[in-house]
Amino acid sequence: MTSTLETPVHVTKLRQTEIVLLVAAPVVLGLGRALLVPFDDQRWDHMLTDMAGNFTRSAIGWSLALLAAGLLTATGLALVRLVSDQARLAVPATIGVVTGWAGTAAIASGGLVMGDMAKSPDRKAMVDVLTGFNEGNGNTVFFMVLAGVVGSILLAVALARGGVASKGTAVLIGAGAVISLVGAPGPLRPVAITGAVLLFAGHVQLLRGLRDR
Image 1 (tube, rainbow, N blue to C red):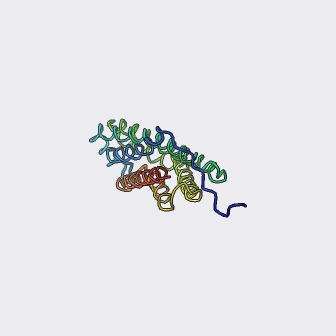
Image 2: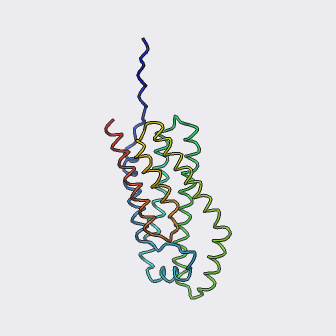
């Protein structure tokens, strides 16, 4: 006789390194965001002055943010693997997540470059370059981050729909990733840090749920 009970969702186990990254990546991101001098496209001159005055701290912060972007790409792919049976969501989620964190890596690299630029005496020329880039080619990075936002939302939906994570945990992961991506440039440091905290909480809740199974 055929059982009327629903077949339990199969959840691929995470590798030990992936578990470590799920916990560590948001922490690295949060530390980086707390230390760096964020972008401020309304006050470029003030931002550059702040970067020059806090050069070492900001450089460490942007370096950590760059590292975190790479780590979060890996964690995103690990989470996508848990929902690989949902190809209609998993495929665009993969593309979006990878593209989005690549965009934040580009932003972090820009932060490191700007830190060195800030020590140059020709401030007006630097402000003109930053303004022109922000209004032109910088839009490419914006669309990369936007793709990351869409990909993160699709991943969260897949995690909840596939039974890999509870709806609350999926919301934490999705919201944390979206806020982290959108808040990557600045200028609101608390927003970026909040995203990292939510992402950390979501990852921990996910790991607890998988462990309990």
